[in-house]
Length: 286
Image 1 (cartoon, one colour):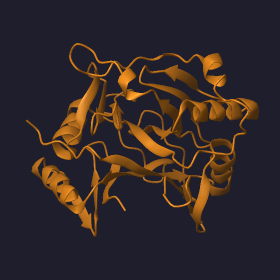
Image 2 (cartoon, one colour):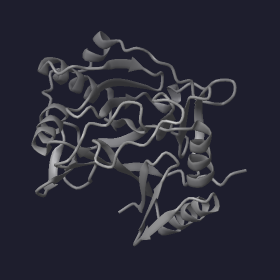
Image 3 (cartoon, rainbow, N blue to C red):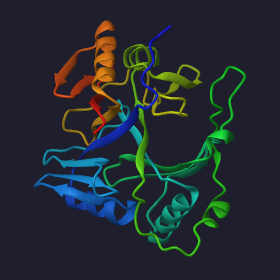
Image 4 (tube, one colour):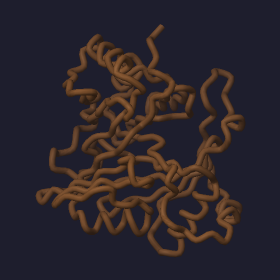
């Protein structure tokens, strides 16, 4: 049986390459509701509580749009603390007129989907109470995709004004295009130690720590054997996984080395790429 990752493991932040930092900042502040934590000439770190970095935007002057049918980001998912917060985000987006790409009920969560100005996929979602999450006979979570009951959700918005993302917001999960599900399975389960929670044939796999519905999703919807995007493409530069202590970090690094993954070590951090080139920063929670 594989060693499993510590149950308190979470996704930390997402680092994106964008083509125009000012444009992206307007979008992520005014439409999504982040605040600037710090800003440099070509990079900005965004937060919701004034302390915790959740999103890094880095402008490259030579950026090109990420080509279709390549590995990389499918979407990153912003988890808001409750249904009312999701309702207010949805109402704000509808009033802004910004195009949405979808709105779904996944049984364990309700979600809305859109893309930033560079086409980076975003999910904003709220979880249902854990006791309502359903499992199949095989023990996996029953992940469905049905139309969101928008009217019912908007009724939760109340009279409270939208004031941006609540301070308790976090990056709930990340969903990636990969070239091969079997290789991704070995890396994320045997190497990192996540547990499989939902399998969709041989084209999508969802994994988590601590019994969550999923922290990581991988799919081959861009094509089996899809190539990596160019280095200067917009999209995912890296995402971080937060571990509770240094001992856990060492355990994960050892497991990754056992499966032959190349790991770069820094102080209280390690950097590794999955078999499809998606870069991950492993770090100890501050």
